[in-house]
Length: 393
Image 1 (cartoon, rainbow, N blue to C red):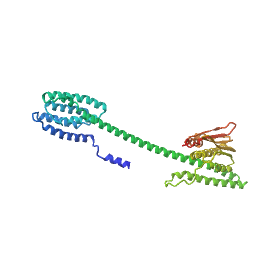
Image 2: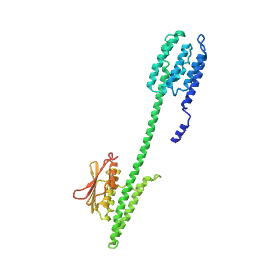
Image 3: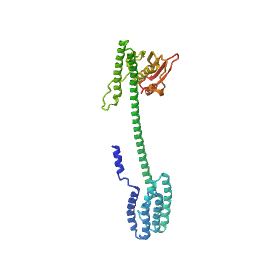
Image 4: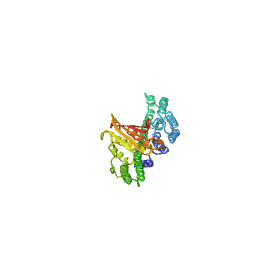
């Protein structure tokens, strides 16, 4: 709708082009000034060839007032002075120079307006003084004549200031609209990254566990069929769990406003996560020293995903037999630690998304993640996440 209104405004013939406006203003000025010049008071000089020559010069100059405002002001001012010195009097003979002075102010700046006033006001007083010697010289006329050039200059200054203010508001509104669009795009991009992290965590962990379990089932298929069947049951359970989490994750993309199809993982789901790893041969110890709801939901989700990703790295890269998961409340912070006894470290951030994803999740809720080798062997991932609800927002 806004674009339609903009196109409609573009097709609107207002304001008219400068040359059309100049011709229209010149026509109106010619009608009013010519009517006044044609009839002079008895006892004063009547209209003749000089009168109409000055009239033609004034009106003709107004046709180019938008392009040459200062020059037009000089020409019309000289014609107005010529009328006064030639003996014509009238209320509208100075209308062309008033239009020109208005144009000088409205199409210039404040400095040019001040300079024009400093020149036009004294010049008008001098002309009035000289003309009064032969025509008429009422008391105080030169002083009064010095004031009228200031009227169109002040009017033009007010109009120009108003236009600049409107343009300023329009520019600020345009910048605000552009900022809102950038913010909307940024939020969309953040949501896409969040969903990508969720999908990566679910798929990477589950597929890694299923791969290990399937390999164990294949190795034990002939010699130990019970072990093979148990491993395949774990594969099926892991697959179902992965599908459930994927549905919950991508549920936010539904356009029909339907609620997510599953709960968001929290700290109370770490037990199920650890049990699904039993069939991989990795012995995982779990200790959670915090109560349900002790931290914001986003912080618990971040902690769950950090543990999930850390254990995935252990399965894929560490060649470890034991791992320990610890979650505890330290004042206003939630400390999450995953320690393994493996002989190999996870790949650097440039070689995979695991460590980088954990850091992104921690930073998103106002926390930090440290990962590195342990003296004597093994690898530790430690995250500090804000358990205080205001700090996590």
